[in-house]
Length: 109
Image (cartoon, rainbow, N blue to C red; front, top):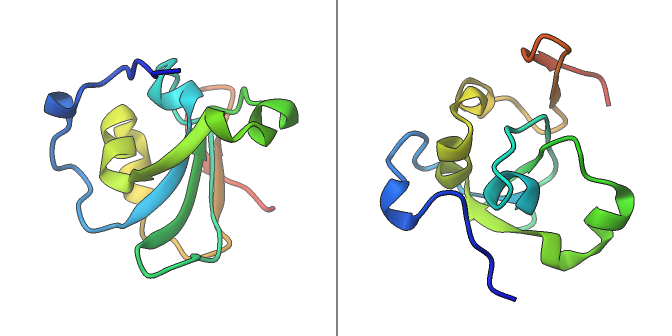
């Protein structure tokens, strides 16, 4: 099944270059939801930033299906939701979510 992304390659501009790769769900890249939950895990390789971005609407069943998420350049996800940019320098173990006012807040995992 071909995915129809909300942004085209020509829509992507340099907002957060040189941050490496990340995992993001189709809720963000296909459905167009803002990032609602994200955390930084231990990277798996030199290009991996460790960041994982989700909308916050994903169920465990949704996440268990590998067709629902993919590896992207962090810059690509920053183009979907630029609110994440100021958090990209946070260390491994950091986690964030949107509160009821839509503001990103740090949380304990």
